[in-house]
Image 1: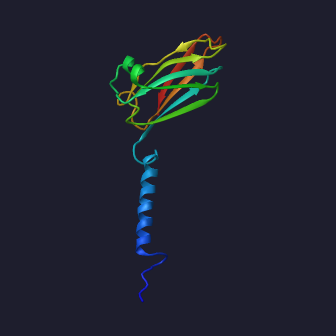
Image 2: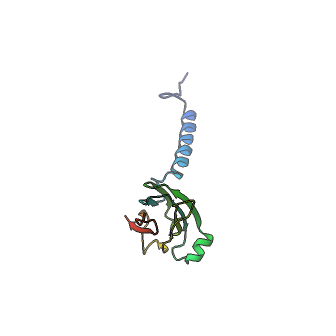
Image 3: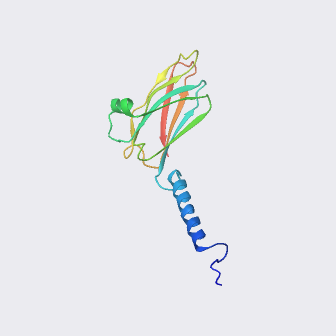
Length: 152
């Protein structure tokens, strides 16, 4: 009688295990930002005294007009507490253009100054894999909201 097992299982068992491992690895890599498509990061950094409600749009076309981006792009609405940050990540194909269409300082009952930005575009304003940081600050009397932009 010949024993066809070598080190823990038959050849058929090893082939099944290898196939299963291959499928698991493929599925896990598909959703992993460290492997595959590079990621662009947007940081919303609220250095203001009150929360800031941000309406931002991102889109896959770096040449898109602002009105088209705000009509058909992915809308991201988030309220960033005072002193806090929020991070949004998208693969580089999905984030070719980004704009803050409206940022509102929530001083009293949702009333406060508002501000927006120009469209930032991949290739001219930032590159794939960069971190785009929008920093929100307010004036001493809470009458102004300013947005500064930096790219790293």
